[in-house]
Image (tube, rainbow, N blue to C red; front, side, top):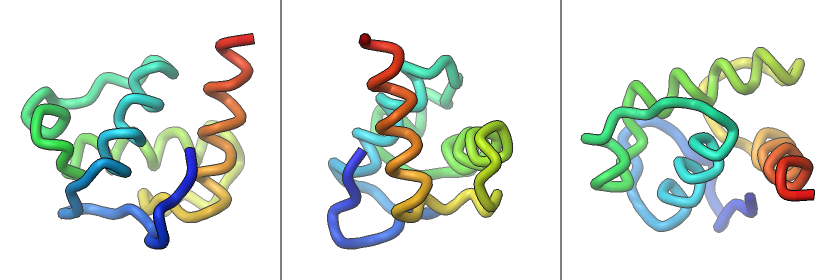
Length: 81
């Protein structure tokens, strides 16, 4: 995924959060419908990001920075090839 000029973290909303959630779901993470329906970065999305970071040897913060975004994009691309 490509960040739109900001790191993604809890309490944010927007199209970039929606894209993040779609990518996490494509990778098999389950997210609360209450967050997905509002494109809201809540605790469930944060927990999925945190686990993704741990699984991929990234600094586990629950915040989507450029490194995490790049790894997400890489993993999603691997799935579709």
